[in-house]
Image (cartoon, rainbow, N blue to C red; front, side):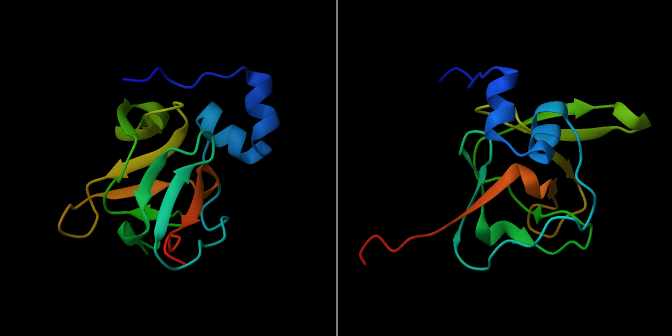
Length: 133
């Protein structure tokens, strides 16, 4: 297994927007409904910190919770127990760079029953390209 991507605080701050830095490196949360929607169509959602593939576009659904939601992780996701703010939740982080992404809840649609509630600033959408074109 490859070692985690490690950068200095200064390198992360240079690479990321202030809000993306706060969310991914400090475990923050963007305000609900503050992130513009991602384009429709086939593609993948990748980590803004390292580009690791996290979710497939076909797993995204509208949960009306204020953050992008996915029913299944499609890539490099680690789960950790989170007891901050007086709650018991499951935090999700990028496996490759340890970026905080959001949380996963057991109230999603079938067949998984999961809702990965992810900060939009932690993601970048990469549309599928037609390799034959």
